[in-house]
Length: 65
Image 1 (cartoon, helix red, strand yellow):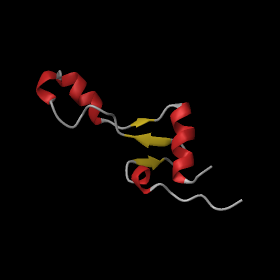
Image 2 (image 1 turned 60 degrees about the horizontal axis):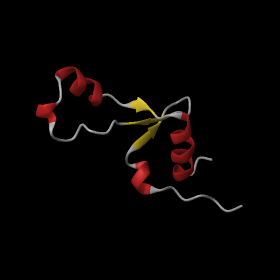
Image 3 (image 1 turned 135 degrees about the vertical axis):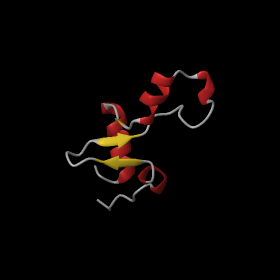
């Protein structure tokens, strides 16, 4: 089976943790901040671990699996 190429668009947006999970930033935190509460803005700042189905899809795009 041939090697999988890394999808560079995804590679710039996500990181792989030491344990192999995929970490990504949350949506809705780039603009229109005035309508959002301070707790919500603070929560959206943080990166999160991608869900299980999303992890499988992103891993394939990154050429991991």
